[in-house]
Length: 369
Image (cartoon, rainbow, N blue to C red; front, top):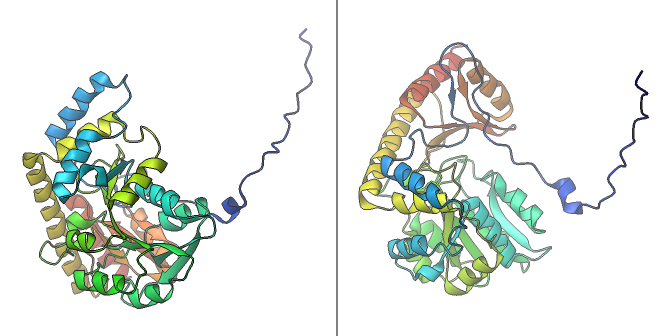
């Protein structure tokens, strides 16, 4: 007969957490498509519907042979290529695990506890999380009635405690973008010691003939930093790599605060392969297809009577207000997983043609209820 042992009581945790965590919102990832009858599509995460090009895949496979070694902490080869692409010295390129990680580095470099960060709202969901987790104070400025940045109000929100302004263009999740003139006029009202970050994660999906000349803006304004990612058009969301183009002093600071060895060797290899001319041509054809599909879907929805913001991203935004949850559930029941934003709206990524066709059908069914 086995003698039972008294259960040992596990002592409770008594560690002290930062008070800021209590008010910190949680980042909500795009909901995956659940198993079910019939085709089901996940269009909730602004992912590319295309796998990486063959040359990128081969570069990653080759890089696996040295995965037992630490990656190049300075991402020297990638910075050399990106420096040439942006016509800056390679030392002005700061690489990390996606543009969201670069944004975190930016906060660590310029924001002290209690300093303010101004951004539009609703915009990229990670902004208030990053600001709060680094001890900063979020200053969200409501979008206009057409779901665009209210630059007049954002300029007015800048105070002596403001250290950083985040401009997401095209804006995620609503879609509108900022023009060269709009950005320049805004910068004329921003003190030179306040950093203005142009988050261009979706730049490649913008219509090429109207995209802002942010390279010229960067050259003319020492307080501007550009944020880019390989997660969207290049389709490397699963490898996590992005970068900033910064002026020398800020670039050095970003290097000081970033996580050592953050950009892995596989990610660096994939990013380098993505910059090869023949791969860039293939990626541009894919981006053009996304732009074409976005226009096709938007036109079909307008014919149904929908009034949506003008999107320059790889997504469309439905300002459904209090019916957002209902609309998202309606779509999910029919095989399409969308991204809901509380009582603000719902976002749909432009994905495979079958998914886009299904979105059109679901939107028609919703209006015919």
